[in-house]
Amino acid sequence: MAIHYITQEVEREEIRMSASKKTMTLNLTDAEMSVLEDLCAKKELSKTALLRQALRLYQMVESRIENGEKLFFEDKDKKERAEVMML
Image (cartoon, rainbow, N blue to C red; front, side):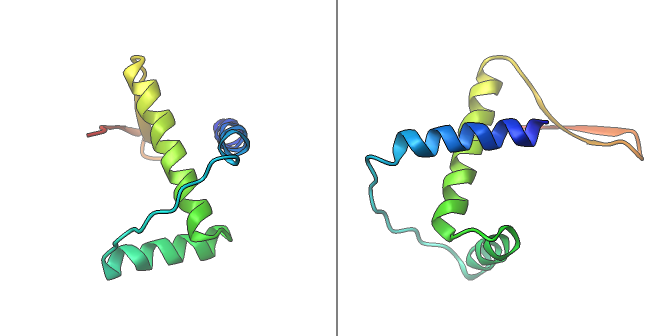
């Protein structure tokens, strides 16, 4: 359910932003580039599409945290829950 919500938010934002795009250069370490390329292959996305999704996800999480909500990772088998802290 949450993944579907995030996907809908990303799609709406992509439509809104498609009219005005800017170009930038991004410097990554070899390790960071490797992670980016692996994620792109796994998700079958371009680097641009993956970075846009990551940025929008970060923006949504930041907004919700600013509104007093919290983000957790939960392991139901171990019955453990850890709060994600944003810098």
